[in-house]
Image (cartoon, rainbow, N blue to C red):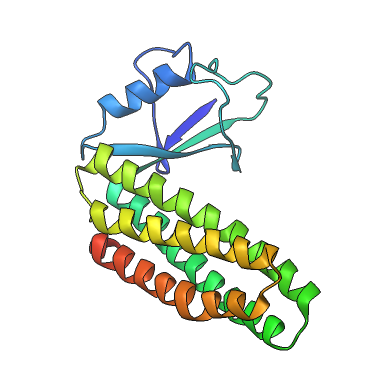
Length: 201
């Protein structure tokens, strides 16, 4: 069985009993320091281990190559922030289309699109929380937490207002909230991410 770390052959000092033990061996040889295992591939297929002490080699693995990708934390956060910004752009586009549908009186289509917007908003808020926690724990980078929390609180308030206007069938108010409250909030989220993680932009 071949073990590759960032494309280079890796020969353990002894045969590891678990994947966790293999990871520890890799970290011990990390000359750059602060390297984080970001991906594990078995014969080119990306996998996730349900248990931290998955046996080595993994159960049922019949391939020939285990490839492990080790990256610096800033590179991982940079990719995560870029994904978050892309999600924001998608939200902005969908929000504009949603408002257009409500303004045209296409309530069924508008409500469907609103559901998708709200789902993405929840995903985005969870994503930002995870990125902030990761940066604080592993990189000692402290994003503007107070600003992020304020944006999160204001976003949650507007989500509540959207639900309330939807329940009362006040689609004029709902459209106004999307266009004049939520859209500017998304712009502020973009600015906050870019300024807090400026190294990754």
